[in-house]
Length: 301
Image (cartoon, rainbow, N blue to C red; front, side, top):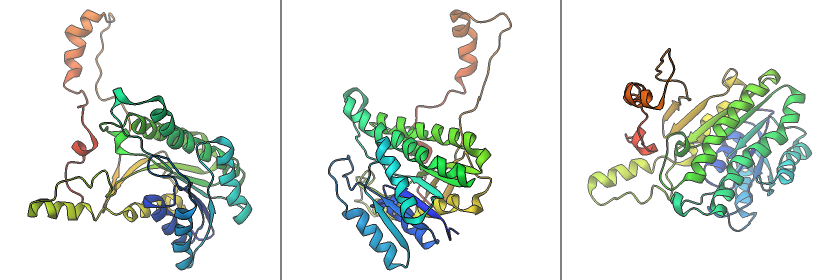
């Protein structure tokens, strides 16, 4: 589905990013593997993760090159796109997957916790997308695939930085879709699910619990790759400005903010009238203070 295309996948040194890079290579794309080789929290640098992904791709007959430039700086993001141009002569697909976590409850979150996560996720998605935009415009085609999260779309504890960045990415994607549609450029988001250290603390003592954990462990990172390949391909013509979630064998089209209830008063409102009439009319439609696991309350199927 991606024969003759060139794809940049950020954060492709492991996990979901690696699986997307490998899947795109298997689908025929030449791949730029971008990864700085940092830890989950963003510390340390190493080329080893990217080299491992490159080895996997080449063992399966694909073609890939490595970029170890950071997405979080404008100048280095330019180098990521230039890597594609230098090695393959063009770029057709950008997958903004790179990210770090600095989970901490809001009232204990430091400015560094906030800025570092926003810098990689949100700024990084803009920088790399913007760096590829001129090429996309020139060739009158291109596809952006951004990784968002139900932590932002729905909510979660201890992730104000991550949630804000991920929800910001959905707005960025929609803006790109609107601004770039005249150039036949598409932009979509995926909120991926996968078994990780964040879910590995689920109890597995009783037979029922063990069976549930075994099912959750089947949510391997590669389950998210097919949707990314589809959105990157020409088969996804007409799919733009959308948000999808992928969980094991499930694909969800996620809603986007729209009015759900309104009240009107011809004479206008005062704070007292809002309290007396407006608020009671709206209250039944208030959005619950729920989290991702409350909305996706059933086990993956």
